Length: 305
Image 1: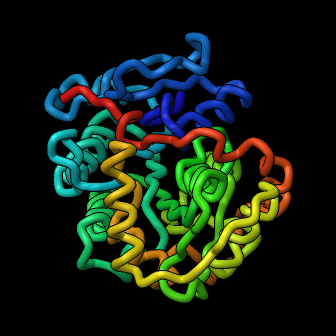
Image 2 (image 1 turned 180 degrees about the horizontal axis):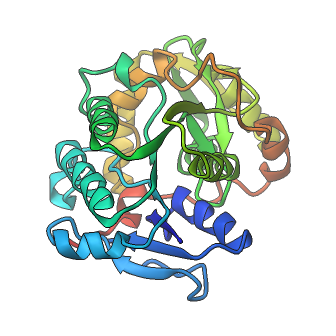
């Protein structure tokens, strides 16, 4: 039996789908409210309650592998999102998994978290990795770069939405920094393969293609069949434009940590790619439909306390 946190969300959903296709029994821990059930009742549902240690342990009991996708993208205190709290909660989950007798944890981190320790998002990821290594359970740490595919492509879809409906698209700086997107189905496959092992490992989850960011944007626009002015803008101006846009959309469009991480080349890897699905082939088939509607990340994330 496998436990997947957030199986009604994005990455967790595709891990659960692939496990079910393999005939495995799947349980999810979730604190999402009002999410649809894409599994027609095939996945056992338990609340993800970090304040009830005994219940959390029982919800993990009997599991061979825990796939932990739990995290928060940004600090937003009115929504109860906080990197420090998420780090503490993740540690509670690891300890509960040990008490419950879980054999192995596959934990989702982020590419190059140690290269930006001063930002709370990345610092929290580093702390979570270190906490997992101290728990004493067999583990695999998976560090994705930028996800695409699988329906909820927040980053790629919203880039496409801007290209589709705005006359000008600005990329941060000169746009020569690398981006190495990876398909969510590849990431789910990697997670399950790592879950079957016993060796403690840390791997980057990357796709087979690497682009300069400005070429990545142009490729999306080309396959959408739209012609726009695509130009460099100072990072601070791009962030401020995102803030203004966020006021109208009532969303967190882009964070300063995301801009900095992107420009530092943290969403690409020197490791041999584990992914096989090419972004160029995927966007060629999706160009006509992607970006029709804006994915509001903030509105879609409603959690119980």
